[in-house]
Length: 320
Image (spheres, rainbow, N blue to C red):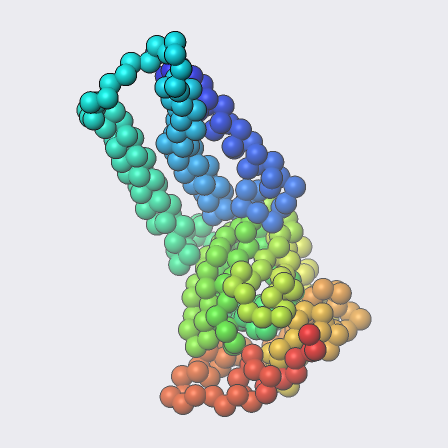
């Protein structure tokens, strides 16, 4: 009974300590699902904490009992531990050793199944307000955000309104990439010639970092962007700012954008004094740009290297 009380006390203390450490480690970073800015990231945080607590139920007794057993059954002349050289089975011990892990695995499986369905990226379960459509194109080494209904596009900034669902359709015009905004949702892969979907929503105004989590070469570390969650009136002002200060996203501009260049290099090539230092703004002459990017890979023949973004032949790559 005393041993049980010790294990239970140690379990409670270690679970609490683990949760405090995990939270403290990410409290200073607003770009983490441990500091959620939307319902999806909030569910992910709860799932992690629940899984950690369940796993500690199996881990903590091992950490506590192993040294206690070694201490109690160590070799000594005046030892009081019972010596049973022919002992080989205990029904109670077997029940605990196998029963507890089975229960833990069953609970983890149930919660994982529940969370997986709840966090389905294709699910549009954030109210009846019409969603803001955003088309996302992964390039080397930047993300292009196209707002087909608003006639604008951006690189380096993703503007979204607070408490309005954002329906994203993603692809790449180069290698496979992985899109993620940790404080809101993610991650989801995007591949050339294919589309995937992601639905998300922000609870409050905030600035969050997004990134590509799939390594793709020299500029990988710079393939990040700022997600700006704004009230409706501020979002409308942001849209107007992009529209007023943007340059036309025509074929020539897109070719420069799609070259193997990181954010700083493309900013130097296409940026203007009216744009922020870390973002590019565009106006759309063709709302079918996203579809043309996807369908370029559906012609039945392989593209030549000089027509394929992501290759040196398509465009320059700065010296390493």
